[in-house]
Image 1: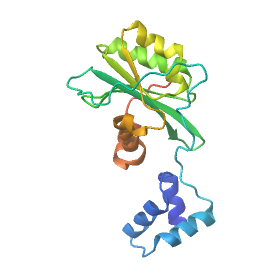
Image 2 (image 1 turned 45 degrees about the horizontal axis):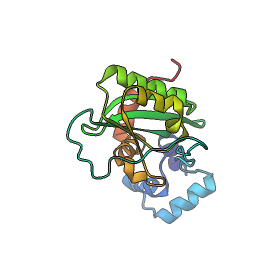
Image 3 (image 1 turned 135 degrees about the horizontal axis):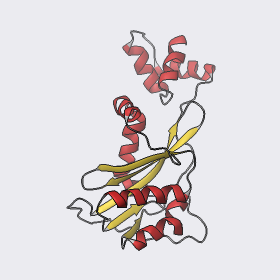
Image 4 (image 1 turned 60 degrees about the horizontal axis):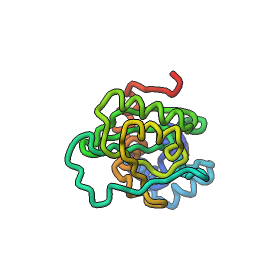
Length: 202
């Protein structure tokens, strides 16, 4: 239990399966059922996103998904964005990134303690000021991305707006893979911590 507690502080995203693997790698012969029982006794719960960041707002316009069957053949043809939770010792922060889908390159990213549309639009403006505007910009149907504050930036730049279908997480699979790498793979998490961080409002 002491080892579980120490490892949980280092990797609070570990569930009982990964914790079992860790204990076995350190020489302890233990099965996942016992680890699950011990973690329950200790009140340890895996930290992971539990809320949906993609709730549309009443009255906001949504747009057709434009990427189905589209051949993405060049840089700055299609950009995509998403927001995810980043677990912290006390609560969560929000991480947003804008990615070029041809190169899989993260153009800009930012962390904030709120998911306001103004924060999202400011990061979008930063990307557009730093790179050639894409032909298409893809998001989910979250209220931040359907707001006039965000979509007006795209309209002003003559960028076509594409939005994932409701309940279709795979429509934005490349950004989802980025989140998995950043949040759940230890090596990438170490790289992420060492990256220069842009905090909203700083």
